[in-house]
Length: 82
Image 1: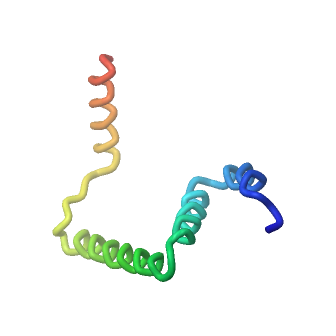
Image 2: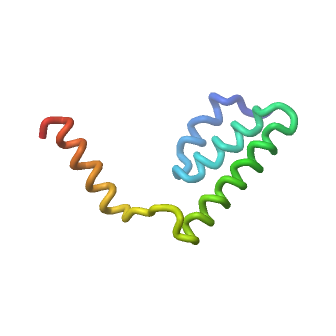
């Protein structure tokens, strides 16, 4: 191996958040033994497809992101006493 993890880490941390997440996901999958990683990937794909279908069909309850963020901020203000 040309570089150690300690040498790669600073470069990896400079990646945008989406790329860091993708890299972390691939690294975690690489730790799975045998075909377990493929099984997990297949299960996640099935779950994501099910959730997407629930949204499309109207079965899933959706929320406006801005409204949810404002509600969370309001709850945090209350908890912080402000």
